[in-house]
Length: 179
Image 1 (spheres, rainbow, N blue to C red):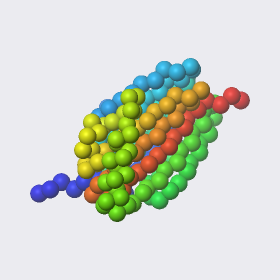
Image 2 (image 1 turned 90 degrees about the horizontal axis):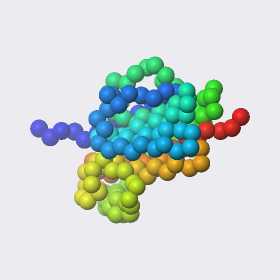
Image 3 (image 1 turned 30 degrees about the vertical axis):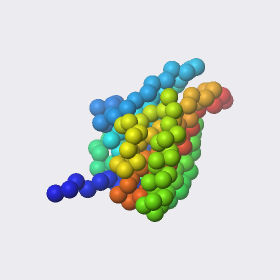
């Protein structure tokens, strides 16, 4: 029997006001940042990603993962179903601000394959993949471009779902703002 591939509707966005321990996830690729006053991490999962931003005692973690994954409740600030196009902003009691936007693009099979191949062909050093980009367009894939900027971390991610010709595109900025 063939295993059912995960589709975008199987995922959820969870935002935590703390770091989440890696033992909850199967991490396929990771990148760590130490930049100015913050530490950041980007993990690509089998399906989804985790972005963590820690500035002293303050932290924000974004998790996009299958909804059946048992995640902690402590520190959970928001959960969102991933459908259509949405933007989120979350200001903490501390100096951190979280901005996130996502788009779920459903394409024809040919358009999906062309867009996925072009995206993965444009990869450069410093980008993060859950697997090597060669032929990844024909399988579910995760790809991230993390960029430390000033007092923040900007991360663009793409998650491809060939079973439904869909690409989930996210843009996340977590930054420290001065009072």
